[in-house]
Length: 177
Ligand code: AR6
Image 1 (cartoon, helix red, strand yellow):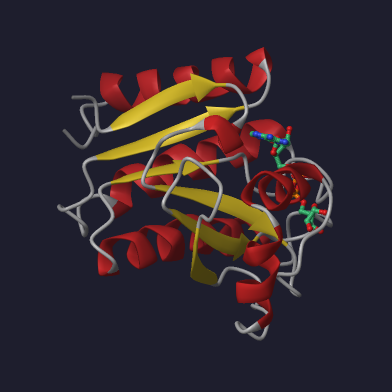
Image 2: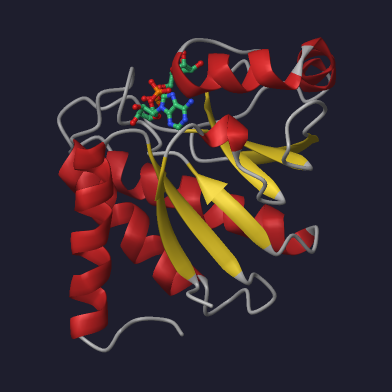
């Protein structure tokens, strides 16, 4: 089985054990993928989120998935992109690293990520795809119990970018297999 897989579609329909939410500091819902996840999970998700006391940029916190096909949602807060010199790359990498750590800590074997920060938070799509693929690939060395990470692309361009980045890592023999 490929450790890192690319899939195009709506993350709320995925049957991965955990899906990651690109949330905001409040963790109480919003637009974009966050809104879609809360709608699909139902109102109990927000009730549990109220007990989490929000999250800092780069942090990740776990809830149940309620009416989602996924058992769990891992809520992380991506950086709002300003100019790339305000710590955004490190903050975005932290989202992926910390989400994988939360998954491993809860013995979650399959986890799906949306393209964190690339919508409302305006992170440039190519740089975000590079950070996502590199960080996940490197982090998997630390979390051998995670069997598969799914990179969810909402559109074909994002899918293409992920595939290009994965191919580059494989060509350099740096792929975690
Ligand atoms: N499935 C998969 N990917 C999706 C879906 C979906 N159903 N819907 C959108 N995307 P965004 P951000 C993609 O804006 O930039 C919220 O209001 C979308 O095409 O959802 O991190 C939060 O509460 C894009 O590639 O998240 C925060 O306030 C990616 O998901 C803020 O938005 C992320 O876009 C977070 O902004």
